[in-house]
Image 1 (spheres, rainbow, N blue to C red):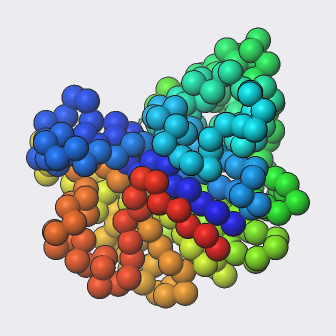
Image 2: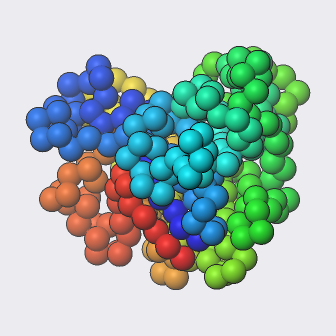
Length: 294
Ligand code: MLT
Ligand code: MN
Ligand code: ZN
């Protein structure tokens, strides 16, 4: 399995357009930008699946060698998109892919409902004939193709703010995906939105070789410290690194990278104390454009 990390920043990116915090200012000055969280995955290296479609998707695809169109004039190796949730930073990019001709889109019932009713991308895209919609049931393995199998693992019920009023759609608002390469046996887990540690997370990581997980915030009170406003990490549905680290260090067999990094996160500073803490445990920070092969 090949995993191409397309973007590694939380909603807003780095720098965020309206933010003058220290790290956004530094990123502007040094050009050390990060695009918003999503990745592409492939079993055979020919058929690729996006996992989440960030608002930066067009630039991300144009910068990704394996996602280059061809060989036919209008042909893309991107054959599907899976959503871990329906947050805007993970779904806005789908509208930018409307020139598609038959891409498969996968999400849980709750996510598909959000994208039909509250943020009606589905209704907007249907007249373009660009995508087909597929429900993903948590814990039910789904073969994307002969090589790549995926299982959604339900993580939480935090909804996007725009979808608080949707009723009777189930509780699968946030999932992780566990991918298995049926040829090599490689197992890759992607969980960019992790509200708390649970038995489901343990099950998702069991036997995994590599995991890219929610590293939005390092500290619970980081937003207030850095910007003077905002809630705690946990109140926003993101387990801070200080807490997930305690769990991840118990699993030395799983190579871990943190992603969905908020621009306030001190691990963005490669020379900082927080980055040294991760280095000492052999845990990494994902980079835009990073390729993983298992
Ligand atoms: C989140 O990850 O909590 C959301 O994407 C927040 C947002 O940008 O709306
Ligand atoms: Mn987000
Ligand atoms: Zn900032």
